[in-house]
Length: 557
Ligand SMILES: Cc1cc2nc3c(=O)[nH]c(=O)nc-3n(C[C@H](O)[C@H](O)[C@H](O)COP(=O)(O)OP(=O)(O)OC[C@H]3O[C@@H](n4cnc5c(N)ncnc54)[C@H](O)[C@@H]3O)c2cc1C
Image (tube, rainbow, N blue to C red; front, side):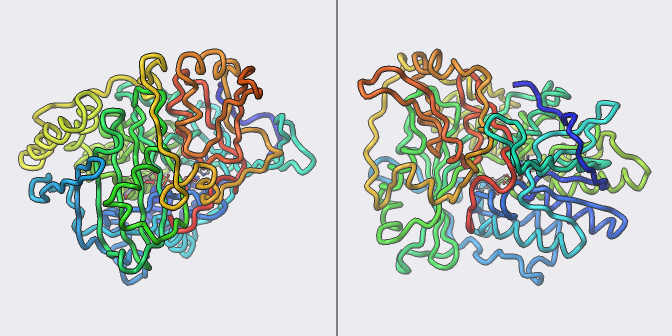
């Protein structure tokens, strides 16, 4: 698809010092830090596509407070919703009916969760937004940024946000609102993983020219209310192994937070080869493992959601600054894979970007590159978090889980003790789309039917994401070539979109006699995970930003 640029439509515009796209931990931290430094002298706006701050935040989360400590050292006194410190930490390798606990002392110290908190990251973001607004940041939820605005010198000048009321065919409808241009001396893209504007900026300025390919996982999560006797506040469990086995890399997490609530989640690395793999059903059957089932039985599932995770780590991080702005947090892939944690780095990157922008503004600069931000990320605490673990993911992809545990563990231990990686920097290899193998070379997988008690069919679960998209607007999932799904993907890859989408957006429908296959896109179900934009073997699907307020409405995920 060609890059949509601000069109000739007349729009009002507003000028700020800094425009921030995305009210996640990265964007909100940047906004807060700018106001801490500049007070009334700096104008900051945050635009968020979710109906409210937190509506699209899924990472119910083990939060390393290092980012929050740096940003708001008195967060406890200010009532930040970090209520459940980790009380016990288990790492298990599981088979179908067995579970083997790894010794905590054998784990590299960087993987320890001691001192972390189990939080609803949605609620943490809501709290951060309150802090930011009290300092004078303007936050506009329900405002999706759909286009970038470029200046005459080719620099990013701002974004178009708040376009509503397009017809299905993309023409302006009766209630059309063109949105506004929000212009800034600096534009921060804090869209999270596989941001749609970030993707355009990375391509336009070739920010990934010197970095390795980005890798991803698909994270799916449910929030459960469990029986009081099954609830162990602060308990953290991570597993690897069953049911994925050698079919794919990945693992699970189960975190007991407050109020008899438990997050149970499952991550599937998206570089799996077998196109018959059905990540959603892997998650559902995983919950039947005795270790998990005994916690969930008698409880009820309250919410469901899914989101991609960036897994490329240190070597896949693109150049972070571009003329007129910067990529923050997981828009640049700052997740630490073996820790499954990215919120702390997102916050640290927001803080660093804000400090670089404030220094530049004070020096009378604007619309140039914030190289000081780049330097801070590549030499400061984010680098110290990401560099030592950089070989875990490529080892897993190339040699499997056990080798990754052994060799990756050794590499992390040495990095912890001596400050360097014995294995140097291992490259990732193929993109996740390219990793997908031919259907004929792989066996279909027989999945058990969800029982409706511990496991659920996909569409029922999607209703627990509370997602919604107005049906009269254009489909935001664009096919570059509409013939590819049936003409190429179906015969060659058994059209894997039917299975990799955790929300049932993509279907191949047929006549009653099984003939005449057609590709159907139920975009109303989309939970904005971006997996289709990543995993389609023909790279034929582009996830474009739908109108503001659409998408999931996660409660306290
Ligand atoms: C299942 C799962 C479990 C995880 N568990 C943990 C964990 O336990 N601990 C941990 O630290 N990390 C965890 N993570 C990772 C963590 O979620 C990310 O590292 C973190 O969210 C990155 O923060 P961010 O601010 O960069 O992006 P995000 O948190 O994704 O925030 C981006 C925001 O920008 C908005 N946005 C995006 N595009 C636009 C646009 N064009 N216009 C307007 N708004 C836009 C989005 O709606 C969203 O609100 C997990 C992730 C997943 C998927």
